[in-house]
Length: 330
Image (cartoon, rainbow, N blue to C red; front, side):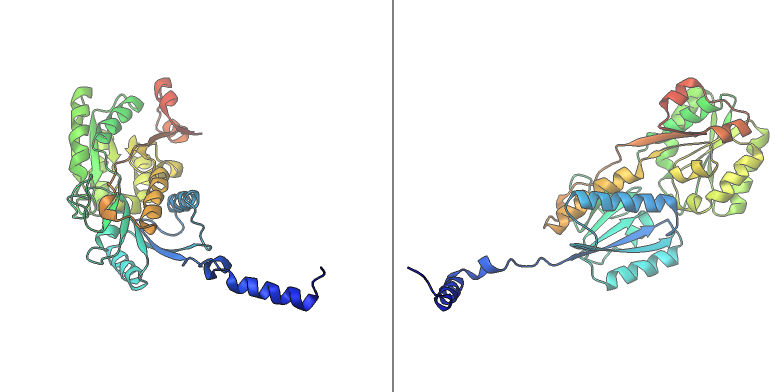
């Protein structure tokens, strides 16, 4: 039997009416919105851009595509306290689904907001009041710390290996931006005693303080350790120039120093932390609570050496150190 065109359309319409409504249209998922507070770095910093790329790579691996199903709103307040607080207020006003915060000051600025927060590069999240414990954070904060106290001993040992003649070492830090410095000092002090080196804590709060702390080392056969500290990061150009002028061997706790002329760094792999933190963003956006996601410590570290700076200081890296390094800058 042949069905006429009108009968076919009528039959099709009846069948369509019989289909369940859900079968005809899938619900459109709301695009999620996260705010990222990049405390301690400026927008143009190479390190910050590398970290952001790692975050977005981690999100992509979890199925979140920027501009498609997620919007990522960045703020770059640097290390200045007033700017950090102002940027935090802007973030809160946008009422995002989640806030991703970089650094202890940036995370502290988000206290009492009731927004879920995933933090990275926080030194001591328990003492800062962000979490109750690493295993059970509680509240609406969780994330990834960047302080592993035993690194202090590694810095001292690597510096002594690179510059065997040093007898005095200053551990440079700002007591306001790096109240956790004592954690590093303890392990560095043990390594210093074993190596026959005098280790001195050197708190600084201005460029003139830095110069005052480092200048005597030039005539004392000294060197220094610059811990990961937003204040030291902010004054990195001055510190690198001063180390070159005073001909002081130094090891840094942040990657950005060495490509810009620093002698060597041993540091947490920050992009790795950002990629790992993206998994927590994913889980919270899918319904997990920050209180149930254990905070974590860093697991990957990198050693980099600058051959040009070593040559300028009259140093030759031993083969054992060169073989250990993850990156050697010619």
